[in-house]
Length: 92
Image 1 (tube, helix red, strand yellow):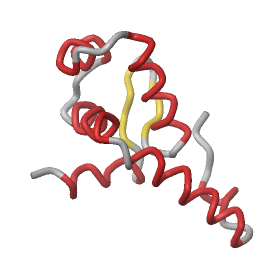
Image 2 (cartoon, rainbow, N blue to C red):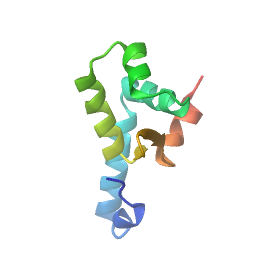
Image 3 (cartoon, rainbow, N blue to C red):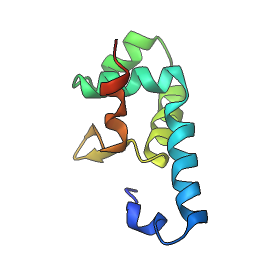
């Protein structure tokens, strides 16, 4: 699903859409925690246990993070994209 920034850089409206999606993805506290855990190398099972949420809720948040350009799937593992690396600057 990884979409390229270049697809959104063609016009101001597309750029706004790109930034809107990214902001929606990172504005949720649970999703920021998920980004931190992905950055720490945790898998989905570990994230489920730590956050005490069900698989359906995790899948929803992962979908939003992917839609917002923050994560992508490589093989069977989630990794941060450049956009998702914002979490490194938000850590306490």
